[in-house]
Image (tube, rainbow, N blue to C red):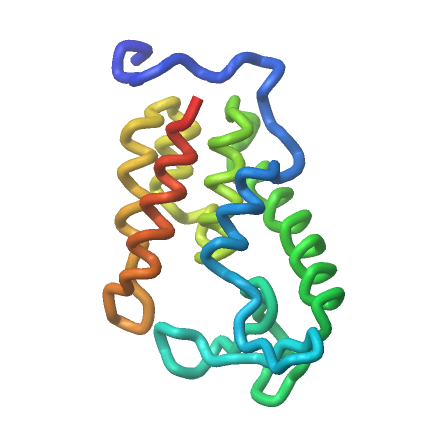
Amino acid sequence: MRETRTRDLPDADTALPRTIGEAGIALIKRFESCARARGGGLFEAYPDPGTGGAPWTIGWGATGPGIAPGLVWTQAQCDARLAADLARFSREVERALHGAPVSQNQFDALVSFHYNTGAIARASLTRLHRAGDFAAAAREFGKWVNAGGRRLNGLVRRRAAEAELYLAP
């Protein structure tokens, strides 16, 4: 099975990072951006670009209960929610990897993917990563580019950026 791997597993000292790194945070912020600025440092909830409605989103891509039309947050609220969400999504990615070695760049790309899709536990890219087939796992990012039944250019660009980060040394 080793010969099917396209590159060696990360060193043991890079196994299971517990927090997303700066590259991953920058990637997420690049694609989520604090949209719908109202002025005065305030940000308003907006509809999902894929559906034109739910899930409503605010700040750095936050969704969930209580996020609805008319909701307004400060920059500090947007930043605090991002930090809390990234901690939760990092834990979920770590659990989904089942102890498989992972570099910081791979982990960051996987957290970005999960933050946007919520699909780390069911995505074939996770299974392929656990098997050590990183090239195949990287190709899987490109399959997650649809929302609301439509292919979205923003998701195409995001998945390409995640795959690039995933494969970066």
